[in-house]
Image 1 (cartoon, rainbow, N blue to C red):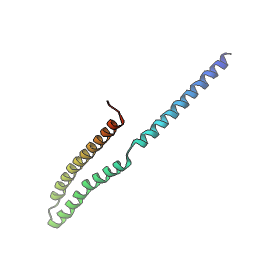
Image 2: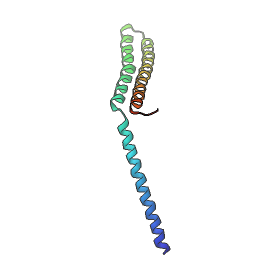
Image 3: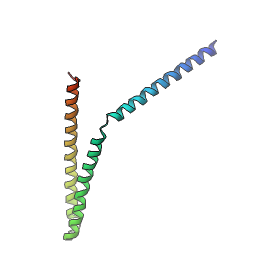
Image 4: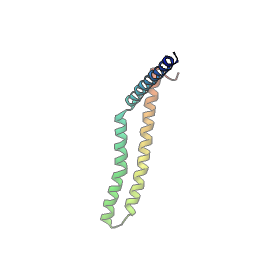
Length: 109
């Protein structure tokens, strides 16, 4: 009798684990659907362009004026600062868009 009781408890525990794992998988899939991949790609392209183009331009200008790393370093600093500003603006824009959508749907009242 105790053996049957033991197997019943084990099978119930395994069933609960399977249900929990299935629920976790659904939650993970739901989170992947919530990501706006166009925004992520847009952000990646902006950061890449803002960080890489000034450095490449600085290298080219250094070669033209024979001024070694001076222009490249200044353009790199400019590019990184512009990248931070671009990221901050994009995140702020996305935040206001999400806030407006949540208020329109009826969240946070």
